[in-house]
Length: 589
Image (tube, rainbow, N blue to C red):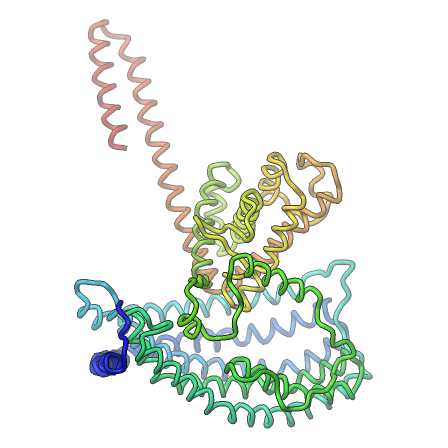
């Protein structure tokens, strides 16, 4: 669209936008008033029923898992068992209250945002979409929220507890605390909470007006000047919505900071135990306020640093060399592509910089992954590495290691091998899609998932696998346990190098561990179950088609044999008739 230039043009653009936005906002609020109570009822009642119904099982199983785990020492286990009574007792109250508040937020904002999205669509019946969008989809979304929450309570939670109860490797030592340090840890944690909570709250409240007016200033500039993220017409209505809702974002940030201050204060007890020094713990109590102030300044793009005191709370305060290495790699990658890092907002960059910034969103990457899972599932079905029986078992039992773990690990391994062959700087995850450290989503959970994949890709690149090794490795991912080096003794792997085998087994185990953690995400689990059902339906249809065609061909051959009993002429006529009929059936199939 053409960006207005000049004061009068920008002023007219702003004035003409006000009635358009007001009508959309009123319509969205009316839809929220109708659909909101339904969403609150579904999410509130559904999640509350799950929480209250499973609370006895969660309570008992948590204590049982912690009591029998070998990952915690005796002293730490006693401390955890005693302290668990508070969060487990408050869990139903917090979950029910959170479900109701979440239902209210979703029931109000989902129809409101859907109304603005419909206004920006290039559809013929745009008026109909403005009224209809956000009604049925909000109700379906509320049901999806309940399903995902139920998945987490039924499957993910018990999976975490089962992992806690698993046997430890022989070289791993259990986590424990020394009883002599425990009183000092509790003292510093309590003092830290009493000191840091009010101080961090004061800093947050002091910075909140600046956050409010700075955000409003930026949003008004982008709205009037049609710059930055509001350059396109479809984004303009959201500018007005963001202006109205920005105070809620500021309030949410303040509340989040106050809640986080409790944990920041309690972390002083961890510092005391790690450094074995009360002095370091008290230094942390003072320093964490300065660290928080500096973090807030970075978010608000004000001057760096903080005027508050910062003491040395660790004996070794040097930077992590691995983090420096990652930072250097990122900087080199950005420089090679001509993208200099900046601390300004994207809207500020858009006024001066002309090169585009393509940043992938997490949902885009998940969509590419699921597409590869579907394609690779068909490949594994074709090669016989998974069968219809495996899919049926996964659907009936709700969980199957061969599909939930090994299929995903096989698919990600295929992406890594493809990236190595293409000599890509990142990971090839789709058609013309390459995930690098510069364009991957800036999400902590996603960085935890994608970071090790870059390391594994470099390890595979250094190993320089040949075609036979790659083919055997793909087979071993699906059919072998990969727990000990002896598991590959009779596997027929081409290389006899024990070190090479150990490295590949470590890569596979790490892949399976990442996939196991991903499968606990409720949304991920629901989408993968839908993918398994889709594979099952398509496999049944393909199998039925093959049997149908095979039956027709068999009938045709038997008809040809029986036609020899009659006269030669009749035989040829019968044969032609049966053949034409079979050909017609084949054409239909």
